[in-house]
Amino acid sequence: MARQLKVIKHSGIAADFDPQKLRQSLLRSGADEVAVANVLQTIQQQLYDGISTKKIYQLAGNLLKKVSASHAARYNLRSALQLLGPAGFFFEKFIARVYAHEGYKTLINLNLQGRCVSHEIDVVIKNTLRTTMVECKFHNSNANNSDVKVPMYILSRFNDLKGNTHSLFAKHQKIDHCLIATNNRFTADAIAFANCSGLELLAWDYPVNAGLKTKIDHSSLYPITCLTTLSAIEKEKLLILDLLLVKELLDNPSKLQKIGISPNREKNIIKEAAALCHYH
Image (cartoon, rainbow, N blue to C red; front, side, top):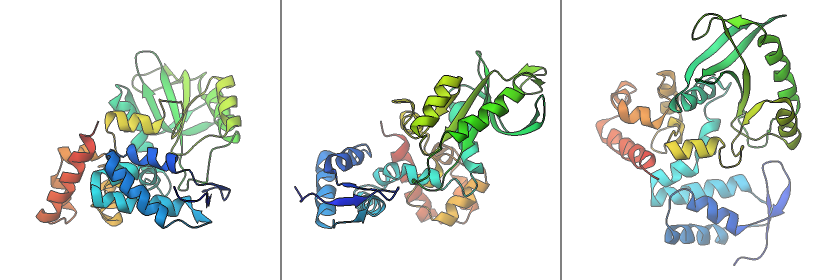
């Protein structure tokens, strides 16, 4: 094992390098034990005191891509979510897709009248039990977490809206629940306040075993931005065409031709997409 080194986290804080933590994240990409051992060995040979976790993450992604593009795509999930920006509009649509897959009816980008003022609402979802307003807090950096001010502010908006009826999936519906979704994490105070106030939270790894990463992995709801065989510009073009999920690309491969992808490249992209979504 390599000697103990300090790495610099996204927050700027130094921490001991943990090879087991890196190993587990590599295994979650779907790579086998032999491939993970080889990647880990190569990375450890390139480590130095003060290396950033971002740099380690990039090295791991590049090495995994040599093994399998779909492993690299799965490993890059958190970065892929950050590409649903810069303002987060595509992230809001992505969250709506996640809940639609779970059987909810969904609406996006609404302007609803509260008791005091009107409010722009990112997403509204409905199942047989309740109608929920969903506020999305998008971050384009891992260093930015949502603090306690976020649920405090959103709670006041929810309280203004819930007394009124709205024309949503039917007329005269009330919003009776509130959820806050983020692609990053919530601080401990934000979680405590939300739990105390009856607000639901969805973050990268929260709730435990039911966070956004878990939802995506379990249902293969990978964003199109995961794919390593597409350029950043091509991903953006597909997002503009309202193609957000890799599954949607598999159902509509002709959209690749629409953005100027050659038949040869299309074959490689579809191969990666299929491997990514068929992984369990």
